Image (cartoon, rainbow, N blue to C red; front, side, top):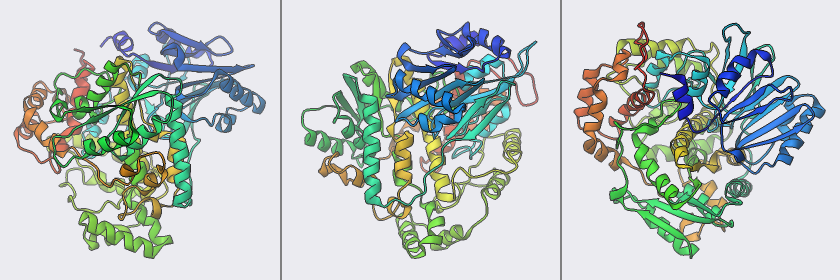
Length: 623
């Protein structure tokens, strides 16, 4: 594949370069395909890429420069003050306090010969990086907001082992999840920043940690309300028109916060084929209570089913995404928003993981509030039909996270865990699908076993770990929706992933935020006076199980088309015959068809790159 084709086809990207002559070859290559660039105080290229003029806010003071891009209300004067703070402190660490702004953004700074790059506290705004040595030059560190652009820039080859790992059902475990599928490239973890040093090295440092969960529910509700209203206001301020999902409780809260501003907010609700889906009913009650608002209901017959169009998708995503199987269903409303003239579409994505939380918090709660934990455990067991024996077994399992990853690597080909297994362990152990080849299993197992020698969980304990990992995963979906929507000129916005919103929610006592007895009590209390009373205490949530099963039947030819000349089969990672047999079967959405999602995501992604990587142990070929 011609690298220039990929760089030109991507509508928005940026590369961050260190302030050193060694970066000149990379800068020249990036500049050849860029539409804009910024320079260090030395005059060397600093940020190179393609972005719209208002997207990058820059401030400078003496030799320090600070740039911000994303969803925020930062002004050039704000950025200048942050740069001045760095200059006075003679350290980029001063940004920790100076750049505590609302919103979701990338923050990039240059000063004292060093460069700092950071994204979000979860993986909505990602930073990929590597250390490379261009021909005839010294080692140089470089960062980019897209993995594929960075891979093209440094000439990185596809890592087939990473593709094998992506086949895992239920997702790739932390910390391997979300790693770029190219050799030598790395992903910056959420809540960390990257420093590009003059000698070509890179350094990763944590700048954010979850708050201690000690705040009472009533106080936390006020904090969350203020943070969410601020997050929505940052996005809608100064706009004439925005659009918003209006479906579940989370998107309803975002929508109702948005209508309090000056922008016209147009709401969209997608009807479900399942008669039990009640989003349309509750959306109707919301708009009725609010009065003169524009609301569109998309009939169920106009909503794409799961697997729709998977054999013809050509989105340029920088990593595989299981969102692919629902791409047309998810993008239907975004396309309507674009047609309506909206440049910003609000969603409630992120609310489930943050507000419903993880029952695995019981691990910590049983040590501090044993009676409360016992009562909650009984409630969850009754609600989800978990056996008390299984609940007790998981609660008493105090093995560290590394032991869990080792068991996962060992058991990759074991049968899936039972559907009624409690959700109290570090995660539900993923499995390789039945069509994975022995080479694919071996490659995935090798990666899981040869990772960092001291694999640590994402959070402090089982519950915080599961919540942060879930936010990482779904925020990556949101990021991929943004990449799909970019050619339409629409920013897809998820305020629940802002650092201030996440902090406000995670600071609440887990026994009050997460309970089997109430549905998302924190957002229910936070939205008093914002969401209409008739809707605020809604306790239902629609799901798309029917869309999955009907979509499998309706789009079976598209699935079978992906089995023909499978790129994954050429890599030696899937058995094409076994995969084809599965695609021909009637599969349960709850226990079987979900196994296809990661494989479809990888197959579609490989085809969209228009490249046929080399098989495991073989020679790479280009189409």
